[in-house]
Length: 375
Image 1 (cartoon, one colour):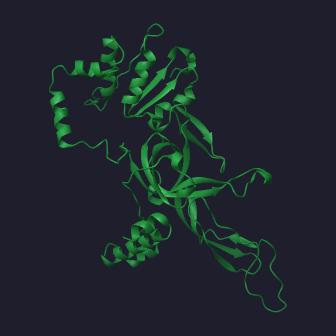
Image 2 (cartoon, rainbow, N blue to C red):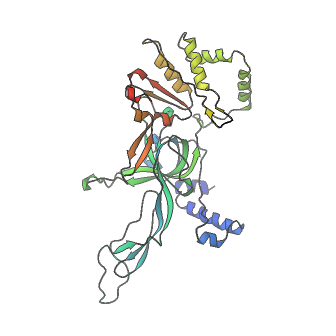
């Protein structure tokens, strides 16, 4: 009873103990031996997932700092895998004194001491300033990667821009998700000191939030205000779906459910119903694959509810991105190359087509797009 609240309040303390206990249990059950642990051939990582009601990126406030939070979203960018030191050893260039430096988790690193702290003999000259150098061969490293998580389109309030947050993943969680994947991450909300180019830009009291990921679950399920899942159906609901499938007039019933506030346009509603349910993907004997996607192009005079149909599809489809062709470019629809501010590395950031993978992309005012941007 005490472990759950303690884990949510101070998650950084018990997790290393969990991993140590897991290694001891593996040795006791003869799954491994001490030699594999000492040579680091065996590495156990404890991951956490939560089934409680997740919060949004907009609800990551100061009251949740250093606590375990669960956030759903779309991975829009991932950096290349880097090596992060977990045990750093530094040696004094003057007296050869070796010192082990503590390393903090996440984006935080190790602070290099500026003076040598070895005890001095009488009349012994002190070491110069900044004498320590890193010993790479003695240090221990783990894989680390940076992700960028963005709110899903259906979670963004009307008229607002989607917000994003940086994530750091390490060890087994590296490369568990690609840009465009919908994931639910459980992690520790941490803060990072704001970086600035000039000394006056470095504000001491300002901190940027980020997430130390403890577990990743692909996909996220919609829930009601009471926390009930909307993607798990009861036996009665499944039977109702089977009864609907046996109805010979099911297409007409679906047509009447598409934008019921708009009169007429039966052919358009039929097409949108087929688009929402999509076709069947086929794989031929020679290995070729035939896509079952249905593409719809709406043409018509002004004020015949073309945009209203798109808005309905955006609300009805589980995965959908709505964009306007008037201000969209080919890079915004596909992918853009972004430079990371800290390491100056380049990485791809997914656009509307990537974020709506497996769903629907609604492009309004397609005729307003430039010819070279119509991908």
